[in-house]
Length: 137
Image (cartoon, rainbow, N blue to C red):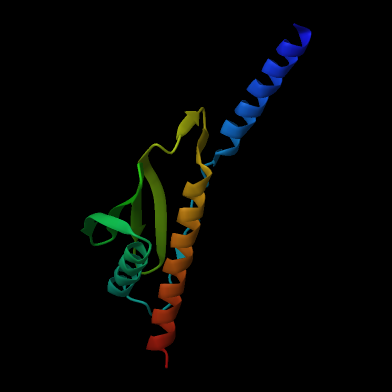
């Protein structure tokens, strides 16, 4: 009986650890600086190009404001992007099947979400740098 109880506790702890490994703190995206000389229209184009390149859909697009959703299998993540000629800001809006949780000021989500946002930030940054480089030839 003692042995069975120990095994049950070990299996429970292993399962708990596995569940905990799939979530991570939701990292707030750092603002992306827009290089000098890049217009707001070029910023918008760079953002849309990055979103579409990563498979995000454009839910709404207005000057300085984009709402976009990523659909992967049964998972979705929606972000709000604000931008001007100085900076681009990405913010989490909602998700489905990504284990989003709030506990006080702490927010957590499936660890893949942070990677998707990191890749998107890199693509936006690269697009803005390429626009700047092309304009300054």
